[in-house]
Length: 377
Image 1 (cartoon, one colour):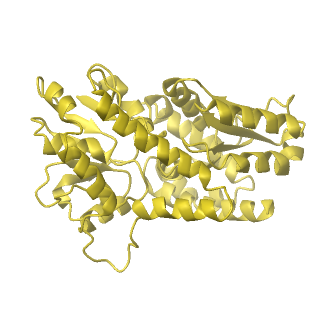
Image 2 (cartoon, rainbow, N blue to C red):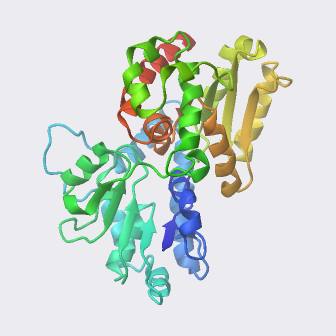
Image 3 (tube, rainbow, N blue to C red):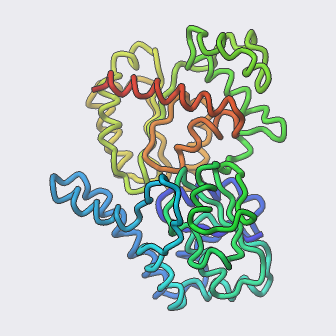
């Protein structure tokens, strides 16, 4: 199959990364593939540039919030309730579909139509142009976020043949409100690499969960109350008797590098516990050297340069970054993040890949994180 994504932030490429092994000739970036015209590439890069500028500009007092609110309104998600017909096209959708009508993606589709394999994309725009420009093979769209705007659904949902692979039931229900046919939606969960799962028996996933449960439930209250549930889906409770790492918090910023200041706040507030080796802290800079240098200076500022339990995750390429990040996920107990696709990874997929224990833990950990945040403030 062809796996098509876009190089905009991390979310869309993160979803495509685990599927690289099944991709014909590797993952294709729709905004800078071999043979793309300069005009089309410029159109993509211009949109990404402005998104990142506005995201960082948000920190500017008064004016920053005003400008960001305009962009936020452009890609807003309407309230879910009361349930109603939300199939009317949005401004965001009209903008991108207009670009498609002008020829966006046509060259790529013409190339791939020479050998039409299943077409799978992790961004809605390639799904638009694959269908509009007459792609001959089946079209699949992996939805990256925990909830989605109207733009993720087809422009003409009732006649679309695009198949949606969604991370949770909420997104399925959302797409139904947008007019997507139920037969075209499958709840699959968010794609995780095999290194984080361990094959059909989820050996690695379950092994990591045992250690995570021990850290998140040090007094055994949850394990005692839900012993039967844990034994049905994971293992006998008595097997959860130790951890292989201290409590670990992983803080990740988005592709634009915004919210980096929260990382410094964590360093300042948790400095004593870090120095006492009571917890580990991962600061995720992604592929942004400026964020890496910011975190590096913050670590030095708070006297933590010699602490091996503070780690800055950074790589020059996104491929290497995803690899390092996936390794860090295995020993992460609390994932603090801006990117919306990672909210899905926190519990339901990262811990138990969609079973009931994930839903219970999600609510429980949400309360723990709220308490943790209140203590920081």
